[in-house]
Image 1 (cartoon, rainbow, N blue to C red):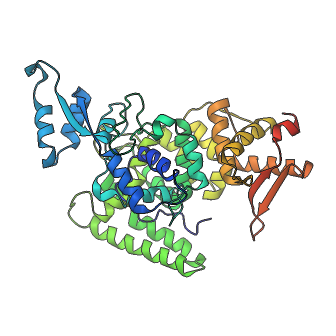
Image 2 (image 1 turned 30 degrees about the vertical axis):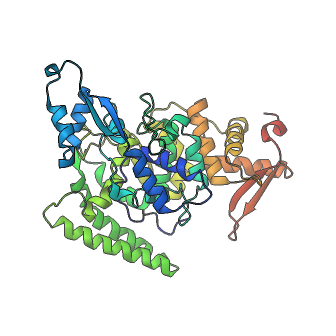
Image 3 (image 1 turned 60 degrees about the horizontal axis):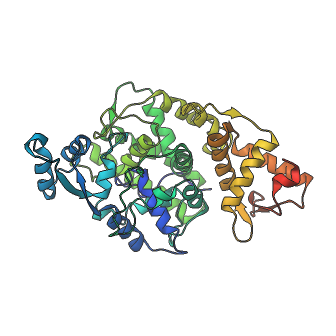
Length: 424
């Protein structure tokens, strides 16, 4: 478990979760990767140019987002009345702009630029999808990739391929994708999110990103106060000091005149807001504005999270109940062996290593997602583990556990199809 659940070096470009789909798919193509290749290839692929007929929603996007001087020609074409031309005009825009222009997206901001090549991939590290250093696929990344369709994985293709697919927009997240990413956000940044949304939930009026960012210095210092005495290594102390330094920097920015989107305040707060629009937990009346409205969905999920006794307890005992209610999935809580083991067997088949072992947490999470989205039943991670423990006692030859040095169960291996053996 992480010493402190706070994202490392959050950046403003970590807005649209849809970019994770091509990023993780590319990382999966090699046993090891490097930041330069992975990041630059992502930018190159999403920046490919495509010629597209101008439409009202694309015209709206161009006027709202493509405001830099380099887009002057595109803006000129978009500003001309359509009736002045015999045919509908065409414009050349980046592939990512085409997908972001979709009027059905809850947020239409977040395009990546060249300077983001070495920043955006860190979102995948913070969410536990990629391994630090080698940028190779972690099991959580494998789980995420299993929930992404082939068309979504290749939606940006390789540079030069222009694989535009009008029927597949990477920025639209399915419920299974939302559940896995939401779990990962709470697991990786839960200490900040718990304090931040406790402050946001009582607000009835929309709140701007800069205003929200003003809460962060107080939140960071509260986290430091709670963790300082728990530090056990130099790395722990270093993380605490960096968090304190960031709090001081943000506080200076809150007293300064706003200077744009690249200051430390905006870098720190945006990844705690924009992704939750993608996840369906925040609402924006204007998809181009950085203003956010708390909804009933926000309250249902975050009240359950905030009122839990700990982050770990929430993730293991209440996560699926909270998401079932928040997203109105109408799932039935079931703890019978057949329901749980059927989902576990499917997740195990997807995630098992060549030696047959799977991290128990990752298998239970994916199994829970399968169950609630495919069969309309849900169970918590702790209930999955209890079921496996019970089965292992009955049939030790079927279920094998690995434990860490503290005696915690970490990996599991099944020596045959568990459903066939238990008669499911």
